[in-house]
Image 1 (tube, rainbow, N blue to C red):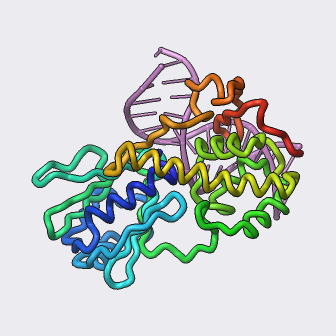
Image 2 (cartoon, chains in turn purple, green, brown):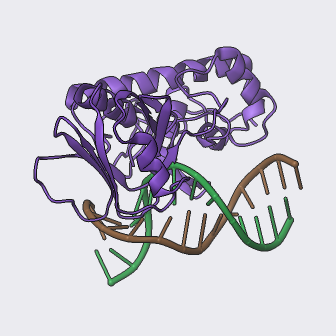
Length: 258
DNA sequence: ATGCATGTTCCCGG
DNA sequence: TCCGGGAACATGCA
């Protein structure tokens, strides 16, 4: 699925496309995972102006007129797509947003796991691109989890998925199986920098490749993560390991703290 | 053909 | 209670 950098690009595309447009009709084809009734969702959002779209963690938030927020998590297979005028709803369509200016976007999901949430509860879990250095140090200091799992733990820090966790840990030269609290502060500082650097660089790459994208993921620029990558940019053999049911890619350049 | 990838949740055992 | 492993979900791609 799309990860944080892709979602950031989607959010800016959605803003360019739909900001200040009024939602005319919300066509709810599949209501699975929805936290309110279809009637309530329609009632709250239809005829409201879309004020902005934001990315928070791995979800998008559509802010509508009267303080109504629609959160949307795409999960593994959710995809957004612009629908041309008169175009039929695609297969596996869950939601269609028809705006008064005749623009429409559709949410499809073959897995039916995409999760729309009306007015998601306030959440203090920091976003990976917004966490302060102090909060990040505190997060590491009392956790005996392996660092890769901690970075991917959405209840600790939001937005980092399997592939970017590998990229970040290689950038910081830290082994993914290091114990979080065993990482010394100087190294943790580097890790903090790597998070921002890797994610921002990815946003830049994706934007340059296609600032208008609304779906899919782009990974061409990844240094470590991917079954096709044999060596790191510095020439070290890429090894792999299952961590938390996911494949971690790493090299001997990455130091183990335990 | 086989199996891997992908996020989250839930279930189980240590 | 925390930690880690595994399954489940549907589909496309090597």
